[in-house]
Image (tube, each protein chain N blue to C red):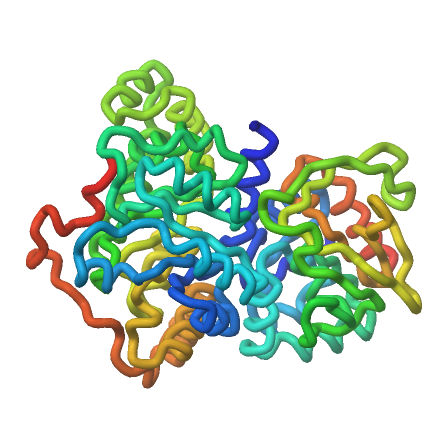
Amino acid sequence: MITLGVLGLQGSIAEHMNVLQQIKDVTAVAVKNPQTLTQIDGLILPGGESTTIGKLLKIFDLLEPLKEMINKGLPVWGTCAGMILLAKKISNQSETYLNVMDIEVCRNGYGSQLDSFNTQLTMPTISSLPIPLVFIRAPYIKNIWGDAKMIGQIDKRIIACQQKNILATSFHPELTDDLRFHKYFIEMIKKNT
Amino acid sequence: MNERYELNKNLAQMLKGGVIMDVVNAEQAKIAEDAGAVAVMALEKVPADIRKEGGVARMSDPKLIKEIKEAVSIPVMAKVRIGHFVEAQMLEAIGIDYIDESEVLTPADDMFHIDKETFHIPFVCGARNLGEALRRIGEGASMIRTKGEAGTGNIVEAVRHMRTMTGEIRKLKALSKDELMTAAKEMGAPYHLVIWVHENGKLPVVNFAAGGIATPADAALMMQLGSDGIFVGSGIFKSSNPQKTAQAIVKATAYYQDSQTLVSVSEDLGQPMQSVALDTLDDNQRFAKRGW
């Protein structure tokens, strides 16, 4: 049995929990304090507003313990806002948050809500068949370096990548019925334990 | 339309658990963003001042909305008058993120709300009960909020509207299939949406609390009553310490079940906004009665 945490401060928390309930051998818990952080095998940073979630991480003393756990190998996956929290560089602002992933992200890279879109893409790392993707005021990855490896890109913009125990996506698999990304992350956790 | 509508509902989902704050200029928008707001509502006057000054309240100056949009990276919303689809066309042209077809402004049409399905941009609308919420969703709203009684700092109407909606949803869920058409007729709600609520036991879109939230405790109360998130209008920039109040309401909304946190964020906040007892308002001073 795997205990998977979903950072429970703001955003698409219920959506991730709903997906996880459909997967066998997984217990999902919302993480809101440092104690719960010690009880999980992996953590999802959901979509939402990165400035809000980042601020709450700092105020409620979750930022430093979480950063340390990720650096020690805790599998973590950031979707949209979660990806911004993981990045070492954010193009349109000076402040960073967890500062653990060798990527530079561009916030609201596609524009306002009128520029939000759906599409699909085949990413061989995840599956040989196309995966539906939902982009909501999404960021994209401008640059990667070090150990970060590209998983998928659209129009030369990287929208999914992995760096050892860290996974990041610009889009929201939790808003679709497709379980493949969540299952991929669970495989990452199984390899880790 | 269908795909766009899904994307618009999805944006509202990303705002869940957050606080959307009314701001009247770029400086206030920055304060709201720094305090951890998930979005700002750009308007010329907060509801408390609209109430005080009277006259016709309209959509804000586009220049002001553009300045606010420039100043922050979080989503920007703005209000249009009920039924004023040209104001909505203008906000869509500016390219903000969400339109509030709002009873806080003076209605432009006392018969018809905007046909929101004809727009790409998402709409949030106020509702006092389930029937009203489903009528707005039927017109294309992708997010709902309680009407409450804006600009009063009095939570009682928002509580009433949220309790009414959740109570009616529970009742609808308990009905048998052959009773649903009569329920739709009585509520004045689209039949297909009545069926959806009966089957799923919730609204098909995100539902926030609005209208009268003045303290962190008010925000946490609405969250415990089942709101997905919070709109604060006059409650922040009409309080004696806007920065601190804004942060405190953000923290209280995220940790709404944690009494210790609620105590610590509520300490030494200073005066909340000046409040109004609702029995002192005449019927024509009640914003919640605007729209149908």
